[in-house]
Length: 145
Image (tube, rainbow, N blue to C red; front, side):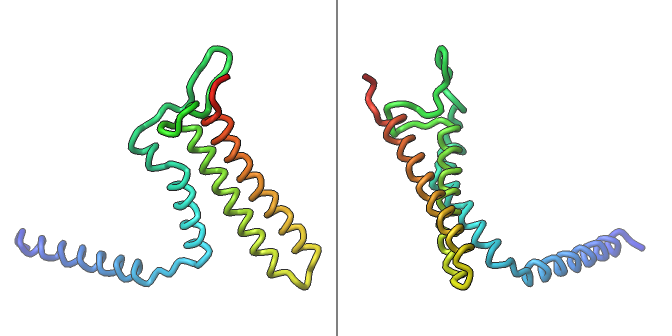
């Protein structure tokens, strides 16, 4: 068999494999939960400052004598990596709390179960709000006294 014929056979086999892979990927249908989770993760990444981390490569923490700073103090123009990671976690907690509040409405026939889901959801939302507020106002924007 000539080299040209071998090359054609190899290309034909590769074409078949790529066609099968394309058909498998084209028929793949992810679940709605997987899409929602991916959307929440993407939103938390973007709102938490993930693009800033990728582009700027900030420091992880700021070492100080006797302590470390997890936020870049007194300015909104800079941030450290730990600050954005905490922010992403807080966004995730807020989304989880909102989901639990929404999910509690599905259990009208089981009020005890709905109540606990609602209370935990409200707790997570309030925790995310007040922790984020503390990071912004007390650690970043409070002037030194």
